[in-house]
Amino acid sequence: MKKSNVDVLVIGAGPAGTVAASIVNKAGYSVRIVEKLQFPRFVIGESLLPRCMEALDEAGFLDAVKAANFQEKYGALFVKNGVKCDYSFADRFTEGWTWTWQVPRAEFDKILADTVVSMGVPVSYETTVTGIVFNGSDSVTTVEQANGDKEEIEAKFIIDGSGYGRVIPSLFNMDRPSNLPPRKAVFAHTQDVKRSMADEPNRITIIVHEPGVWIWVIPFSTGITSVGFVGDPAFFEKYAGNMEEQFRGLVASQPHLAERFKDTVLVFEPRVLQSWSKTTDKFYGDGFVLTGNVTEFLDPVFSSGVTLATVSSQKAARLVLKKLKGEDVDWEAEYTQPMMQGVNTFRSYVMRWYDGTLDTIFFADDQDAEIKRRICSVLAGYVWDTENHYVKNHDTALFKLAATIKTRDKFRALNKEA
Image (tube, rainbow, N blue to C red; front, side, top):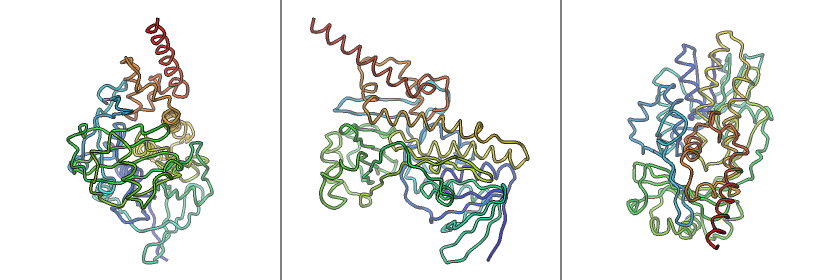
């Protein structure tokens, strides 16, 4: 069996893995990425957030991504029964980036992987991790290539950015169910020839279809648009036929989309993703750290996936470098607690989205401009800024704001009747 060794082994060549690999590589340490699939490969998470731009910048990826001419994204539009609420990232509370991109992930992820290869980091595609043995922080990872060849890779540390593959949590029985209910998404890429009849393409549109069911509309610079319906699995049972018939029935049932996407050409047959929310016992161990969706993928509604992936990898890579230099690392205080601040902030917003609390806030009359700026910061991915009341008190602030709005509207209605 072939044997090799590196300072750091990275599992997964998605945004989490490539950001971590680049940062460690730039510090002068040897890095290798192993990836189960062959790139390009399809994955959702196509609408980025401004906060991830900082991680992409540190990793040295921005120039390569800019050269691809992806659709620039400047905000998010929420729609319910024809009423619109627009958030512009330029109006956020937290200092930082005011824009990002909307990307076909197959192309975006391949650009990141190709760029990290150009930096000197080898990527082994179609290479599956079959076992890991830890000896303190040192490890031996057994991998198998598509042709059946096996290899043992010795490493001083492992960064697991394997996403839905959840390599280390699966191997060591660390997976735990999320506290979020299971949901289902039905989605497709469509030729958007009637895009000009709708809103400008430089933002994501999120449509409230009915309570607990919503739609994403993500335009790409190619003229293709990603459209997906998300809700309780039972909601989809009323739509009969094959996947294309179900998808077209869903589109026809939404007034905001029906005419725009009537008889549209689909780039691929609609696909299904469901029961995606999982978490794990802890984010680190002696010799490894988990990043990205390996920690927890919450829900696609606020496009948090790539941001949590890249920011967690950015933080993890910096701490791995400290470890390699012989410095002490308090993984709980320096990694888990900060990451959970971001995860739990997004989690609160996801839960308040599905229970209707954010409906009350987003579609209220006479919104307070300062409050909107602070919520906009969360929607831009700045979920670590505890100077923001709607980050620091994410678990209670939205409830209180919605209650205030309802009370105000009730008094207005009473005064109008009087």
